[in-house]
Length: 558
Image (cartoon, rainbow, N blue to C red; front, top):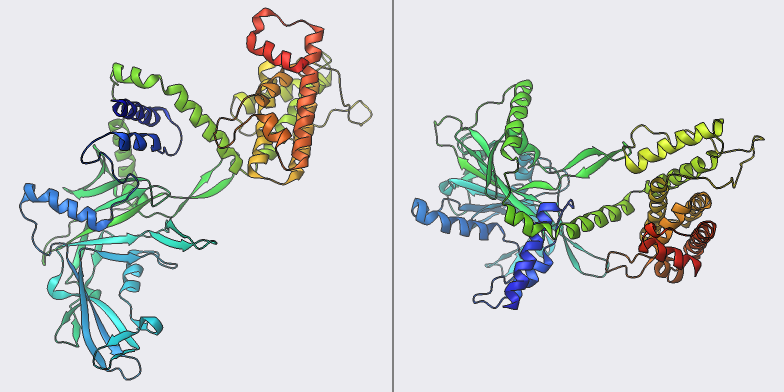
């Protein structure tokens, strides 16, 4: 039926995005809508954006293990948490209270940097005051008491499941609750001695600590969440088996080093360099979410070997990464499947390009870079009139620099390397006679300048950047008809995103609220139209220029 056809197309678009897209994530909203439109009982997809919590995961795990390994022993994951209580001031004891859970939930708060500090915070003494006071049945009233949590020694779980609470709920300015992922760095060790938090209850009121080293747990596996939001992302896991660590990501299983497990599980931040060489600190969006520790039997040998020297660890890690890269080499693709996805490739790549351009709006130095780039291109055009003169040599050097920015790498380039053009007396020589700047280079630079103006508009930057950018583009338009054509083409092209309908003329000249933007955009469009008109009048357009360019020239005449 029609629903199945829509589902098939949605699935193909989803696979094409996974195959060709260079974006950091993909929202399969169309595929989800198509799933919901397919008539089926039970529904093919009920709640598309729901996330399973730890309890649901464990229930599914136990249900899966049952037919394979037989019934799971009762209490295998059960944690019995209890609380010793006494009255503030008098230290009069109150009955021990307890509860059972399938996992241990640990908060990640400010100052919590490792598992040890998180456990100490969780099991620390706390004074229950105000609304948190404890109800006393005998007194018929609430009372202020101290409580000290502990784990019951008589019911230690064989497998201790620790969930790290990597989310928090914030209240927005309008009173709504907003959930946010907590990406704070939290380190954990392979061996966990829980004995300092384990007590044996002796009677209704008292419990005594157990011997140190009697409740040792060793890390057997963990689940990692990769993503910026608690509402989306990807889950994969690490498993320790047969003396080695393995990464299980869907159907891909590879051996990894202990260092890689730590790198992808602790969260926190990492330092990276941007396109200008500046160091930036970014969040690591991968962090451990659930940890599985197995209790070490008394007298048993440690499951994890002692740490090796750092040099040896580094060498082993490099070897394992090399093997992993070989294992992850793409296999030969099925020709028919590849051909089926190929028709969506242009659509996906256009979306990636639009997302990359949109990301430039968040780069604080992008507009300043564009101003310098366009100014340098205008300088090249202004200086390149006389063959064999110093100005001509300056022009060739400037064109080489501009070309490196637009068609090649931009490393180690000083955009202030050239002085402004002069007329010999020290005064700026503007405007010099029109010259022939390479067409492809002029078009690329002018399109970049137009993109810079759009970024100012979309990010609502200070109006002071509009003037210098308009002046730089205006100087380039004065000397290059190809730049004029490029600007008009960009101005007449509708915006790719539905949230920003209309072309340049409508959004910047007609509808924009800032007078500086309206005036600057109108000035550039008028200058570009005059430049194209002069070029048309000087030489009638050749037939081989194509219908697209004739349309631009026609609009310039209008």
